[in-house]
Image 1 (cartoon, rainbow, N blue to C red):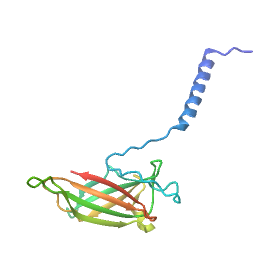
Image 2: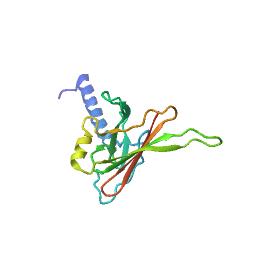
Image 3: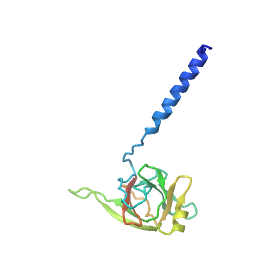
Length: 177
């Protein structure tokens, strides 16, 4: 019987290590945390799909932009729905976006905010839902026109609520300075 050469021993050892590594990585679980533009995780109902969205996030591509043709300001909003494994999902729903502007403080009182605009986007209609979904970023791209002129001081805040057909609402908020 042949005795294994050092090269064969090293190859066998590497194979054993690779098998152990691949077997141990099967139990890795992604943990999510709340960050900027992410809403709280909402538990899916017992009768819903296991892939139902439980979180709404505002993607970092979201921005205030100017229409090159008209010079009108608009929000380019990218919204991502995530399931309980934090994977992007498509889902029907109605989206309500509210724009608030910081108000300056008055004597002996802190500043507040005032609602300056409200948009409603119906994504319950499957055709509208498919048109709004961007396959590259795996987000819903909404172009919101009618944004007031840039403020002189303070910042804007968007409050977004995505109401699923079963009535559960997912929320997220984002500040734009």
